[in-house]
Length: 262
Image (cartoon, rainbow, N blue to C red; front, side):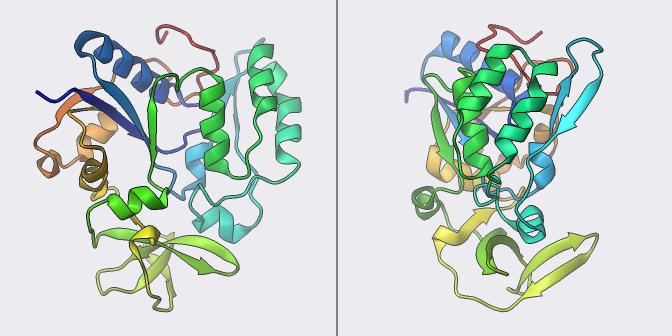
């Protein structure tokens, strides 16, 4: 029997991770304690949606929620650049650090201040590392050119291409053209361009098979929403598990090495 490979996936989901991501870490570690093996975090930093990194925290005195997010260098980058290519403005970290003490404990502010990262995906990942979440866990990034080269071929995909001085994540349309989603059924059509595997990342529907062709996991932990759209027939060899429940799942987890979700 092969050694278990326990995997879960997530986009960068806040500079303090959302509580549902923390619950996936907890679930994976609990499963590892039961069956052994390796834990792999599939970090989907190719996603481009700026809403993914919204971070909702609660005021330490009033308990009122407040949502913060990264600032973005320009409109093109905010709307369409993959998260690994959204640059962190020079003054964003210092400005945000001044706001944090009313929402998180001093040790969490210290972790935030120590992060030096040029882009949004790197910043989130280094925060998760500083919070102690990545200890002993292998991270596989969908934006990594080596991962993309190793993955299976897909036609249902996004393609990273240059546009207006930025790298943008364009949807490959059914006719083979490339489009940037404007909302609803509106797209900005881009001129045809040659593409290599290093530019290609999966859509929601092709992500599972693409990921599995690289990671070859035996167990996959998913949230309820993810379970609803995963096409498990793409990877019948995987044992699928639902992550442990956690309250206020969409808010930020702002502790360090808490043993269990509360």
